[in-house]
Image (cartoon, rainbow, N blue to C red; front, side):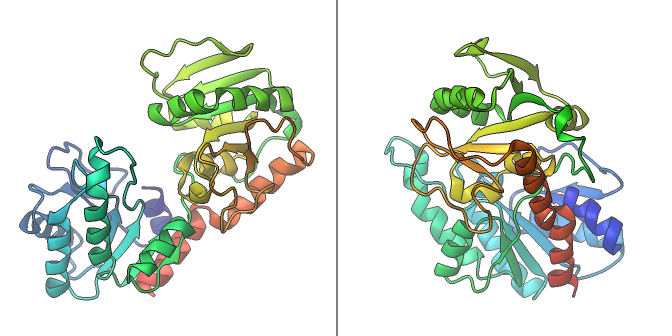
Length: 342
């Protein structure tokens, strides 16, 4: 939605939306026309796009497909979508553009469906990635795989903050030494389960007063503190309230694979507010990330490292914020408008 807003505001490009969920009960959103597929099938998809074209009174409008395998099929193998897009190329040649938000999911557990579906996902994505006129993804890790699978050139556009991008932030001296833990329940649960000791070390490092937990309640988690640092549970908040907490806090904490940080909306929200993102990658595979600078765009934390080498926090906050401006939603809209509309 944020990308559509930017395209409309700066480039006078109005978007319409097709929702690939037959059970969706929404409608027009913020002045954007939206419809759904009546069935997850080639005909259902075509009918929905035709409704969009009729609404804007234009034929062969460019299509930007947001691809994430589990968004189109419960088990993450939307074969119907592959067949639909292959047919689409014949019906509307040179109009399909694709953004790959996620690729296949890896699992080492044979009792998990992801273990068996992953090779099928890879084959499906390989076929779909050959169909787009313009394609982009949000992480170099994904781009490497897509191009290896024969997609052709894939551009890189990192994820941006979808809940707020302030044009300026309050003076750093007005921030409290709080650490924000923000995101979906599963992500925050992973933060606490895999990295609570690292989070406590971070709190000691920066002299944190509190841990601010923002998001839907985690079932069964009633922990009131981590090693003496109190947890303030805010629950699910509206965007404006999240922005306020970010703007007045020094740091955020996330357990996340460092090479995939450009995909993380939580990381983007933190950077947009100059809230220093501290990242714990418990997989310990690679602590560098193409497109981001360690020590400027994030601070990688390791278990057992008591005191990483940090610049002054006020300077680090300013650097995080300033660097983000080159990958914010305005920058993303500029790239999409250039490559799709010329």
